[in-house]
Length: 331
Image (cartoon, rainbow, N blue to C red; front, top):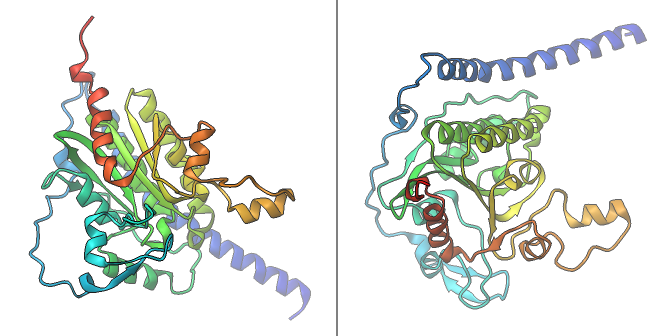
């Protein structure tokens, strides 16, 4: 094969790959375009927005038998103290000895957060795509879906906190480190759009390693997409509360995670774009102690308040009450 044939083969492969990326985008675009067209059509006075059309039926509580993991030992990575898994579940995986906040699944966090029986998941069908033909990517997603019970790296829906309704989004680090790809970006964007239409506040718990490398440039595009959704929601007068948990990094920290009206964080959470080691190697300087922790960011004004995990539910309920437009006096 001569040099000319080699160059032509390279161009053909690039063209084929570009075609697959366009197909991946177009598979998501029609639903979004149709949805927005339907929202803008109609008379000057739009009918009351119905959440039933975008929410799944409430999940029925299932009786569980004995859990074999309940008697297993959990070792705290902060102080090396040991506790039974069942005891750690009761304290939401916050070490009773040193107070270290360990990772918690999205489903467990949601169960603790909302009033019992009030949570309904958003119905956001997003097709599984593998635009780069990444090896074993589809198998990995299917395996995580079976293991975690989640469709993707984010759990989104509508629930109540002490009787006050809100759109709630929880990212799950157990699903590919909560990385943001096409599906996660669409679910987060859709959550903001539904909150805007239903005139509800939105609460997002972030936990992510950043953009999903398996989806290439399409994952990076979700940063602009979600940031634009936040902007539209803010201009409509909606309340957005972000709770940054460990870790909140990469493209998520550089987009919707840090654009909230009120930003809370869990103690000790790592929050930043690149890791400390990468930054030190880039700038050739030693970073300050505690750099990129929630405490450091609170001191420098990037976080409004650090709230311990057992207290977050009450704190969020109080914020929803304070910003409830129905209780504001008419002047």
